[in-house]
Length: 181
Image (tube, rainbow, N blue to C red):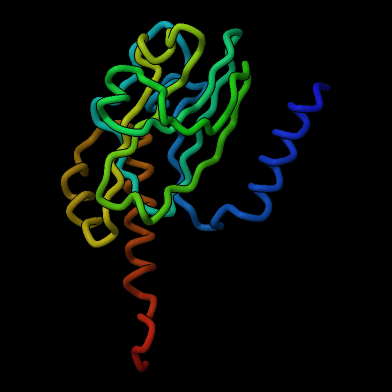
């Protein structure tokens, strides 16, 4: 096995074992099943019309299997995302025919839209729509987000909403620091 591939695999396994939050709500960006929200594969437009709700500490999983290598970049701005301009973009996963990238949404992303894209020579992936924009909401807005999306028929969105309700209940039941019980 290629040493670089071994290193990437070891890094992912170490990350999964040691760093990922145990209760993180997972949102798959790409996958192997037709009902996944945004397959990370070429030759089709995959910009989500209505992506699942995302909050800080959610676990985004970018995954793909393809004869054509793909990558994952965190784009610097909407303007660069729209133009497929990768200057200033942060490489999260290098070109590979197989990818599984777990990425935890940081608190600093609250109340923002984050942009991701794949890049191969000539920006073919990005120009063909292999990119996604995710709105990252504040936890304080979770109830309103749930109510706004409750009628969404997508199974993956419904799964995320169910997990979000549980997490919201857990957060409400948890005593705040400095409160007396």
